[in-house]
Amino acid sequence: MSKRVIVAISGASGAVYGVRLLQSLRNMTGVQTHLVVSEAGWLNVQQELDMPRADVEALADVIYPVQDVGAAIASGSFRCDGMVVAPCSMRTLAAVALGLSDNLITRAADVMLKERRRLILMVRETPLSLAHLRNMTSVTEMGGIVFPPVPGFYHRPQTIEDMVGHTVSRVLDLLDLPQADAQRWIGL
Image (cartoon, rainbow, N blue to C red; front, top):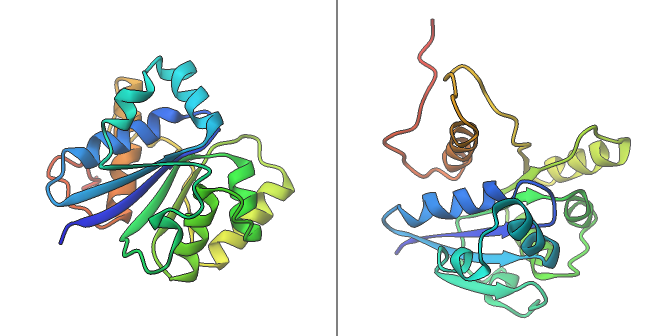
């Protein structure tokens, strides 16, 4: 059976992370992707990437409307290996932290937490308010992973694409997905 990964794109800046993650997962054998994008997420895909919706949807195996809280991924009986919200808006973070399953992104995230499955939130905001920090703490205490897409520089990135790729590679590591070309720190 293939691994199943849910990818959600919410309304924070950084749609490139979700799209790059989908591209990376598409190139892996034995990985099935399930995509859900908020309305603001689609706006950011258009604004930041100038990428047609159909091109993003073509990267996923299964696509769900964000309002479909009755979708397969909204149930704990749906077997799934992990979920990544890339990027994760502060609104989505707050909804997850408070258990507000008011759309399919937050419902699927709630399911991941209650079923003790891997949930990775690539939160995108700066500076952080106390409310943001408390919500991050709450999600972490529930077993989620708060993963701000902060670039590393030890691999000497030359382009934004290099920085995005390195960050996505770290997320793939957290999902336990093998990568032959991952740049790893080998020490001094």
